[in-house]
Length: 348
Image 1: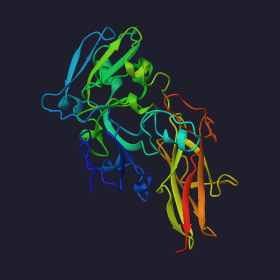
Image 2 (image 1 turned 90 degrees about the horizontal axis):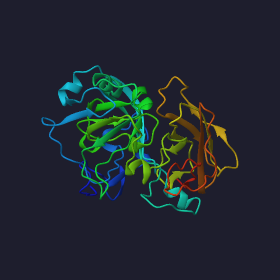
Image 3 (image 1 turned 180 degrees about the horizontal axis):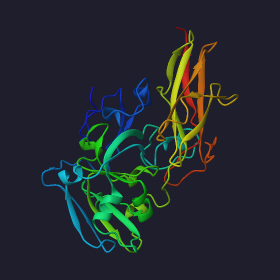
Image 4 (image 1 turned 135 degrees about the vertical axis):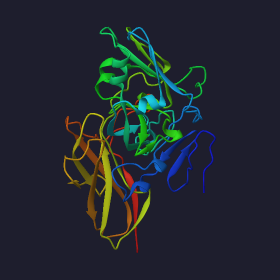
C-alpha cells in the first residue's frame, strides 16, 4: 500500500518508509541483506516543500558572482560531457535521530521526529564543483559558494540555499547527475544536485539551478535560522532491524548493522546485547572498504524469552566514539548517543 503525499513522487510503501509529512524516513529493516549502497527506491527523502517537475531540455545551471571572472551557464548535456568522478557518499539529515532526545533522554526537540533512517549511501556520478569554478575563472579572493535549489520557495525564506566555504567547495564537492548508475530520480535532485561529503544533508542542495561565488561571507536562513552551527556529521550506528523486532529464541541470529561518521572511516564497532552491561567487538570486512559507512555483524544466541535492548557504538579514525548520552541540541541536531534498540525474544 502506498502512503500518498503530494510532496514526494516515488512510491512510499509501509515496508520501506515511515512518512513524516513532506519527507520520508527509510526503515532500517529494509536494508537487511542488501549490498553496500541504499537502493534509490528506499533512499530517504527530505523536502522543504515538494519535489519539482523540471524540464531538462530548458534547465541550466548558472555560475556567477564577484568571486568568478565570468558568469557561465551549463546545460544538462554540457555537464555530462565534462570530466566526471564517481563517489560513494552518505547523505544524512542533520536531524537524523532527533526523536531519541525525547524517547531516550526525555528532553525532546522540535522538528521532524526522525529515527535513524534519514540517511542513505549512494554511488554518485557527476562533475567536481571545482571544475565548474575553474571554468568560470575562480578569483583568489573568493570566500563563499552559494548553491540554490529550484524547488518552490519555503515560506517567506525563498529558495533553499546554504553557503559553503570555498575551501570545501574545491575539495570534494560533486555536482551529481547520476545516483546508483541511473539519472537522478526526481525526489533526489534531478537534473543535478550537490553532494557534499561528510557534511549535513542541507548542504547537498537538490534541483540545483544557481551557484553564486562571493568575495564576502554569505548568510541565508539555512545557515543563520535553521542550521546555524552544524556542518560535519558525528558518529552514529544503526541495526538493520525493525524497532521492536520479534526474534525466535531458537537462534542463533546474525545481527547486522552499519556505522558512519562525517569525520572519517569507522575503525571499531562494539555491540551490547544486554542493555550496556557487557560489550563485544563486532565483525566487519576491514578498513579497505570505502568510507561512507561500515557494515558489521555479530552472532547472538539468546537463551531466554523477553525484551532485550541492543546497543551499538562506533569509533572513527579521529578517535571520536559515540557517547551514552548527549546534551540536548535546541534544534534536535546531531544526536550521536548510543541508541537503545528494543527487540523481543519469543518462543519459535
